[in-house]
Length: 272
DNA sequence: AGTACGCCCTGGCCGC
DNA sequence: TGCGGCCAGGGCGTAC
Image (spheres, rainbow, N blue to C red):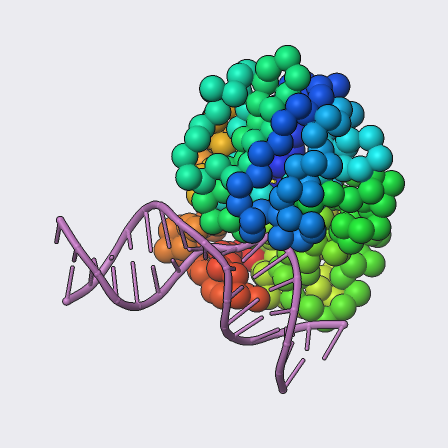
């Protein structure tokens, strides 16, 4: 389940291989992947011959900037991007749905077991408006005041953190881990958070995302980086999928509830 | 505006 | 060993 840290790990690994390289062939073999626009023939034609100017990330989206347009890749739940120095080095099982072959060798495969991911083109100049994503939690502008402004509503705090239009990049794992670190119960109305809690939550969100990147992502389902290496951050999860175990902070048994149709893990002892 | 629910999809796991 | 059923949940659409 690639969230902000996993996509950032992928971005950092791919950028040196992709930036400045020209796409000589694009193969898209799964209709669902290109469901948003034109279908895969259109998309393949549009990217072939283009040079990848930059590899960026916005929230959970990876962006390959190709001059005036950008190829947006969203990995869904099980999407993987795998790099190989030559076409023959790529995996070729039935879950590989797209391949980009680069000038001078080098190839990128998109593999996605559950096909929740997608790719589509957007004008590079309109990325920010068209993606309709909220603030990046790791930029300096994500201040306590910015978080406070988002929390002026009655929604429960966890579904708010998962809402990509408000904050971009937080998914189920990092939401649960951040709320645990901040000592805030996921069911709390956002508008009920006190000043000290908003401060703690802002720090917790940033810390947990940075730790996720530092440990190269959480490999719960099948996440791995473009070289096939899994991340190590799951070893450091404190509540996510730890129901029934003792809280590392207070010893109370970790609970699991359903919140907004999502499995939600927290400590009833120290998350108020 | 909020909340709930179903859908997409596959593999892993459970119980029988 | 096999098979049905459930679960995982990101994002979207729809309904209330």
